[in-house]
Length: 354
Image (tube, rainbow, N blue to C red):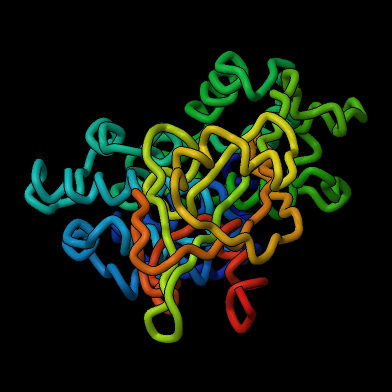
């Protein structure tokens, strides 16, 4: 059987009508690829449309404030994607005179763009035969060719990439790349319907009745649990009621997003132990603090971390100084925050007594 022709025929008959497939604009293709890296199409669709409505071109994205970009990204997670895309837009404006690079090598050099994204953009927008390798492609190729190297290792990825280089269409490389991704998403899924698969006659995993053994993966990295104690500190009354926010910096999670002052512990702690902690004393030394309310425990799951978070509503006197950003409580929705913080605000701050 001819793998490439069979796959392309399937794609023409079964591809979904998605907005980023109606364009050859490298900017729009780039936006879609970055959004969909860690996001389901069902969720990413609306984000894609809103992003392009706010930032319709490279110039508008490059000129935006980072907080604007992060706020629009809020809820998608993996915020480094947004920060990198913002930085890359500035690179294109400054180093490429506002014109999106047209070669795989130059695209690959942009901040936040790896092999997969560079291959997708260069093939779809510019017809360059650079094969994409994502999770869907790794699953499809490992099954079809019986590749036993773990796909989460460089050796396994290289084995798949070498196969893809030999098979990619030089006439329509963009269609080929979209076809293998779509086939992995719709047909060669984690639990595939092999009886309806047009590639089954050449699939080694199907012939060997061992579909469930592919793709092979190495031992997964374990998750660590972190305990966050957020201090929701308010002051003032009525229209002057304010809350304190903290911008996250450094190389930890949620960089450049806002959350509340935080005490992190190695295990779950009660509020009595928090009051006795060094961090509490550093925040509130000599200050009168009233604990008004304590939230339930929120469990927030990240790729390699589980966050166990509690929120403590503290009230301080007007005029008391803290080394955090003081904002009007009604303005809290204007700031980009992690989904955990957004969930807390939705649950317990809006239309509540917090």
